[in-house]
Length: 59
Image 1 (cartoon, helix red, strand yellow):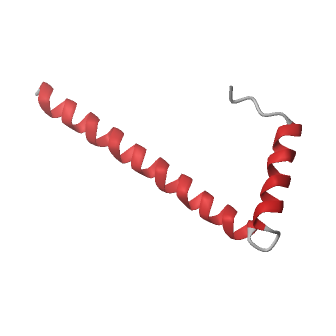
Image 2 (tube, rainbow, N blue to C red; image 1 turned 180 degrees about the vertical axis):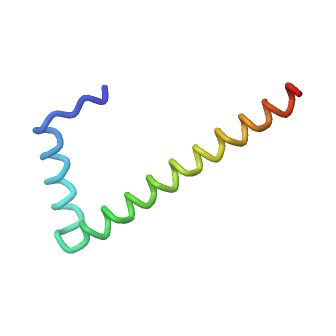
Image 3 (tube, rainbow, N blue to C red; image 1 turned 120 degrees about the vertical axis):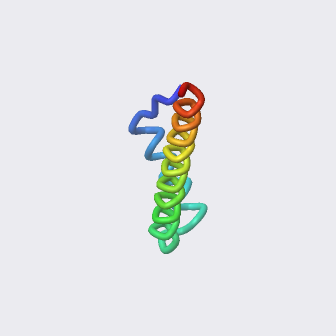
């Protein structure tokens, strides 16, 4: 699982193109990128908070 070949990527791209249309694809990509960035930021903040709490408990 998680191994996408070129054929699968092209099929997904074609499906997105047919479903959303060519004019909305750049907007969709931008929104997806922002969502991934926010998700990574939240994960990093959570990791830092947990590390901080664990460090405070050990003192």
